[in-house]
Length: 83
Image (cartoon, helix red, strand yellow):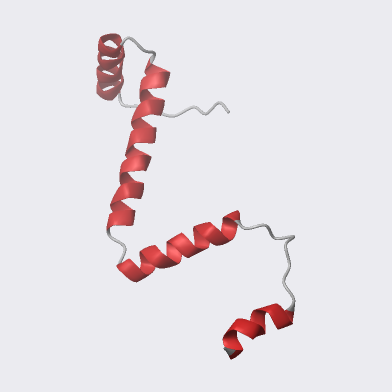
């Protein structure tokens, strides 16, 4: 996807210098920077969660991985609850 964005001339100059030092294109450098920032924010958000919220998130991730076509009868669900 191609998007045009306005970048301040001083920032663009700095990006060009950094891209020369890193031996990569300005586009690649910007993609790497944005990916790094997003990853950093995700880790920051995860670290700020309480233990209960982390457990809930883990359960949500497990539920998303489950096979939705695999069904269980009502009896199989209720049997362990009766014990």
